[in-house]
Length: 426
Ligand code: SAH
Image (cartoon, rainbow, N blue to C red):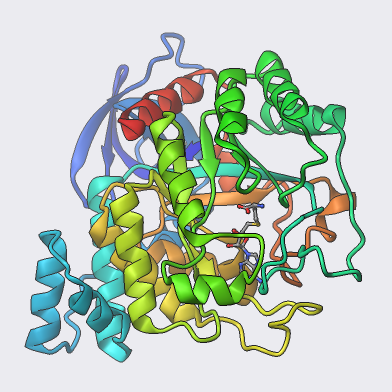
């Protein structure tokens, strides 16, 4: 479920393999296979974890991954003002104040590039060997809410609605885990009370019974009792955004139904229940200021989320914001970078909204700005288009380079994730 950074073999001595890491350091790794079925020689490219050889990787693929992760960028000496350099230094020491964050978010040109590359350096330093690959299954597009930005809103009568039944959800999850090697799945839906607590618990425990996988749920603001039951049924995490830290903007975007304070309280309670919590905001909503975005980042830090889920607004037809412009990609990238400085070890997935706005380069740019995870859409084909929170959602074909090298069917990678999640919840 995690892609490790490729390295090139420099020397092989029995079961010892000497590889050159991306920072040019030569380290020694072990080949755990006593029969040495896979022949490894100097010049080969390999993936390794915790000092152990995992698998060989084609040279072209190794270069593609290194390039995608910005591992081959040379140290640059960009033109930045002394004030900007000083603020980056402050960021490195973890003491950014709101005014510093606003200053960084307002950067452009070479200063913006410097911010992004410095955040990438930090990612490399703290979580160098990992790009985590998660899957998401969107099991219902029914929603009782009327969020202004979202195409699933109850008021949207143009949307064809669907619901997957318990069996279909379990089977979809099973396929993702057993055939494709996913170890962490997010089950997401609109806020749909058709699924009772009992049904949701059956879905979670049904999947857990069949496969070794971490389950995160993303079903909106259900009762805390619901979440307690789902934890008992085997769920490990919850993905729930606070959407914006500005209560006035929140009210404008959700005039009825949702309540800002209650949503924040729910998020805090979920942490209290021992869930791994993924949260964040949308950037580029109409009326939102850079100061609001700075406060979003500070809220993320204050909530001590375990995974940051934030991305740009994408304008959606048949919503009250249909005529508004989508969010700015560069601002989303700067948000990722500042988040990386605020929480150096946190998981930051590249979100689909960013890939939708920039399908060619969005993912690469997000990695180069400090992101370290992917969320791959696994919703069955026949439903995918109908989960239209916004139009033209980015979707990747099965068998990408990340799936090929980042997922494997061994139990070892589940254990690896188990250890990490345990550490990250503490
Ligand atoms: N019902 C769940 C899941 C909602 S959809 C919940 O309430 O948490 C997941 C996320 O998609 C939302 O939290 C919102 O932040 C995001 N989203 C919805 N519409 C969007 C749009 N038009 N552009 C960008 N993000 C959007």
